[in-house]
Image (cartoon, rainbow, N blue to C red):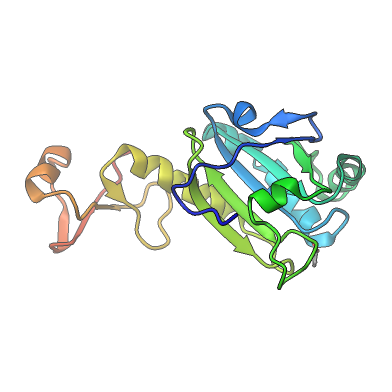
Length: 210
Ligand code: BEZ
């Protein structure tokens, strides 16, 4: 199933290292980062899972819950967690879905047969509190993802959901932002009474509102 931005993230029931979950019930009104990795006991995946565990406080600060998935069984995840803790210096602190029958992998189109017929690619879905898909990423098996970038996008989404702004290239929190082109100058003057740097009529730069 092809999932696009704005679609509702499909619900599912699956076994995890934290017991069986119903996805929508589990994430409730939090944000979620649902990500797949190709296989347990592989080196790049080991570093990704460890780094994601190290981001626990960053996720919590943003009301985000992380959850991993591969087509291995929960029992294999449990055994692999020991290696992750030993090599990455942090215990995995989020559930890992066991999906040997590929039910969730197929629901989320995480197997790309022309890349690998059986294993999941490195997919990322950022899902908002209304269960709407807000970001999708697909990385090849040989390339570990940048989970700091996932956090950066969540920061942008949470900022731009609450204010009439967008974030420019390579933005990080605290940087200047851009007034939405759909906002008239009169409306912008109400929201940004200190004015803005009008580089073009469509490129109006203001300090971050938060
Ligand atoms: C890895 O996680 O290291 C990996 C997994 C599948 C293919 C290539 C690398």
